[in-house]
Image 1 (cartoon, helix red, strand yellow):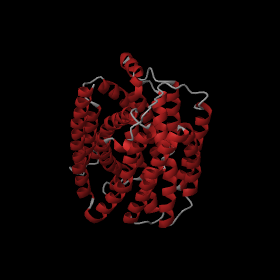
Image 2 (cartoon, rainbow, N blue to C red):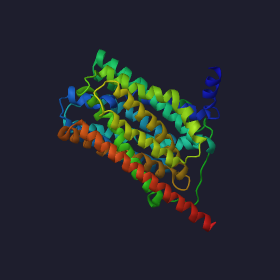
Image 3 (cartoon, rainbow, N blue to C red):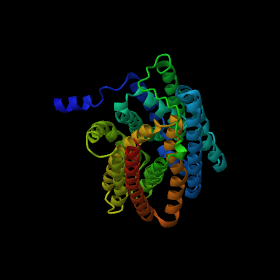
Image 4 (cartoon, rainbow, N blue to C red):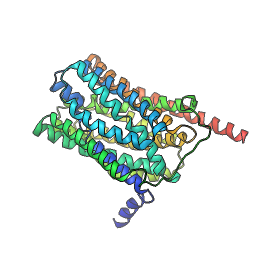
Length: 407
């Protein structure tokens, strides 16, 4: 047991102090994002908005995310990651508090668009900061530590969110979201000011390549869009499935989703360390992760047994644990040849565009064809994503061979 513990702790060694601070800031921020998993339930139950209309609201959520990520990438390349992160956190805190006072469909479309525009400017800036604070050999583990912070926050968030809804109602969630974003901004101001931070990997490119002209990265972009499209069903339509088909309460839904984050917190870093030492490429590992997510949609349709929801969540969680860190690390590595903010913005935009179409399409499909049909479509789409990733491996091999001939 002691050896197991020491091996677990050793997977965290070598990461910079700045990466640990950035992880803590991310944890505080993400632990407050408990509104998001319950957003579809809040809109449906408290504001009496129909499922198709909720789908449109989620599309505005995604549209704001796309523009926010693009803007965040541009600003990061111009004014630096620190200013972008600080401004995004402070403004997001204020906007989340104000969002609770909007009660109309049109107003919520506009409100969620503005909130996500400001909030997701943080993402490309955070990725560039993470790259700067990490030694080259620690990139994937640094990304994994950030994801641990995110998922520990998500594991606490939904569970606490369910308790807050039970005791204070949905309005309490918006206040907690706003306050935690502001606390994260204050901590950032105190510990990661440029004068106090040590850069581990400063990348300077004399003739940067535009991310928009990188063909291999566009193939990767399409695969990440598909991954995001399928994965995001777990944060909009799947909670409705839990409630409508299996009759789970908000607290039970929160605990089930909390299992996802807690499991990732315990096992992702050792898993990533083990996979890093394997012979598999980053892209092949991403494909394996996406395949497991596809499998999670298959199993929930096999039986009405309540425990199958845990099996499905487990498969999705392991798939996520593999796909996210290695896709993030692939993007960071690729970004070294160009404008880092631009590359990381494009990576974030793949998931933001998924937000536009994923929630809306899922809601519309469930409304017209039911849950089982929708889950089957998600399975097929995920498998298409796996095939695209194998295509990317072929593309990268040709690129490597061509570079070898030139050299």
